Length: 289
Image (cartoon, rainbow, N blue to C red; front, top):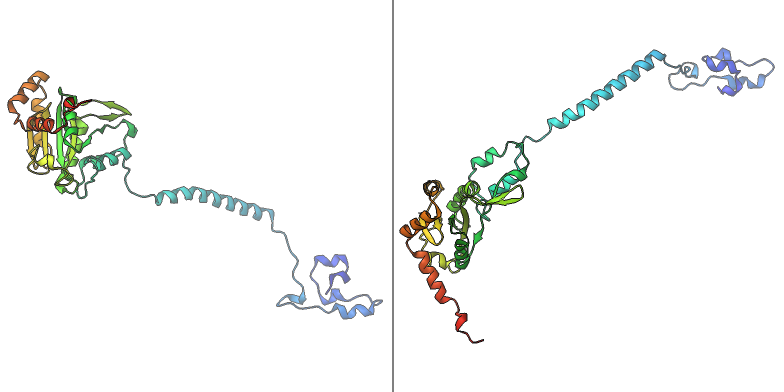
């Protein structure tokens, strides 16, 4: 039924056949008053739309706002529940662990210092001590390094990159350099009680001076020098315990006493190698300019 043909007061009540009967003066509209059916609707007309009570609207709004607050509170908790459980590792501690042996990182060993570094420190990483261990590759570099500071002892580590024992020794030598040697702390260089240096054995031909001039019988080897005088040697060492014992024994000596002790116990291998290299070097004084 078209509502345009019905009186205005009939818009707010259900339609029926009785309401659709027109006035007798309009007989030609009778055929348009037949109710139309749509599905299961009664008398072909939908029931009027009614507005829900105000209390129901307020309850719905309150429920939605409460649900929104609960959702906002639950999101951070869900994010924390999926947080990775890997412990925090200080960047500089991890870097120091991987660079203790020069360019070689240990594969099967986990030092206690790495386990301690998993705990978060109260101080920033820049306050940690980073050891300074230069790597030398020829005899001239080693000789000049020993001449730079003759008042302090110098610990030398002879190693090879492919040697597993050298890799394990490098971890202990790195701790020794951190506790006894030179380093950097808070972006400032400091001098330790001793100096630490590493000598890399690369190939048989390139490192012939290690086996022939210095007479190193095996790799790894630790040596302790005062100037050019060798005061201690550990062949095939797997840790630095004996080296630390020797350092504690010699720590109380003055530079003069240390120099006399070095002259007494030195085997003369390095002094002979220095003399041989002097004869092999070109004599610039005899050249004509």
